Structures are given as structure tokens and as C-alpha cells.
Amino acid sequence: MNFKLLLPLLVLLGLAGCATTPDPQCSLPDGHNLRAALEQTRNDLSDGCAPLFDAYFARLMDIAEGDPKPRNKQHFSEFLEWTADSGLLSRRQAEGYYNRYFNVKFMSLAADYNNCSYSCPRQGELLTRMEEELADKEQGLLRVSEDRDSYYRADQLFKETELVLAATCTACAAE
Image (cartoon, helix red, strand yellow):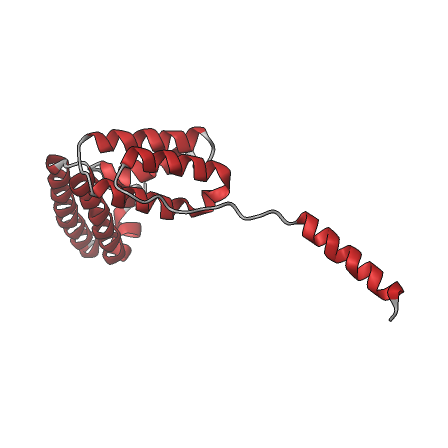
């Protein structure tokens, strides 16, 4: 056996074994206690699980649905502030998450474009995105925080926007 060839291979394998680090233990929270789930999520995200943020957030929303109450809105606000303060999300991203689920305004309409040249050609796409966001608002406002008044305001805003957009695009087409 040629030890001159085997020795470098063994050294490389040994070095490769030393260079690897175990993956963080990223396990989505379970149970029904939102506060405990938020704490576990903070720990996990701080310990390398940040790429799974969306999955953690979705799981937290599911847990909160199991015990809906108005205070849950504040818990999510504090959690999202923490994500921005710790650098996991930008401030704008954190606000986007909060507004998408817990605010009546629609994030999918945050563009500053001319309606005739931008919104009208994409009217169907915009309304689809708003419908998807309204479903998220239903989860956050109704099923997580029991804020029926805000949800119904968001629903009404969606219907009004749909009508105004249709009227605007009809006027744009007539020009």
C-alpha cells in the first residue's frame, strides 16, 4: 500500500472534519402558549435559524390563533421590533410584516406610480395581491387578535379600492 498517497488524503479528511460545525437545531415552536413560543423563536433566530424566519412567523400566527385576544397584536409588534433591533429584519421589513397582518392599510398598494400607466395594466395582479393580503389580515385581525372592526374596515377599503381602481382605469382608457 502506498502511504505517501494515503497520508495527504487522511490529513485532508481530518481537516474537513474539524472545519464543519453542526447545523443549529431549528425546530418550530409547538404548544399553545404564544409567549413561550415567541421566546423560543427569539432564541432560535438568534442562534442561526434566521433563514427560517417566514416558517417561524407562520407558526407563531398559528399558535396565536389557538388563543385569540387583542393583546396578541402587541406581542407581535414587540416581536417584530425585536427582529429589527437585532438586525434580523430591516425596520421596513418588520413594519411590512406587521402592517400586512395587523393594519387596515394594504401593503400591496404601497407603490407611488401613476395609476393610468402602472396600476391599470396590472389591475388584475394588484387585486389578486390585495385579496391575498386581505386573507392575511383576516388571520391577523380576526383569528389572532379578535379585532373585527379593523378587519371589516380593511375589507371595506379593499372593496372601495377595487371600485376606484376600476373607475380610474375606465377613465384612463377613455383618454
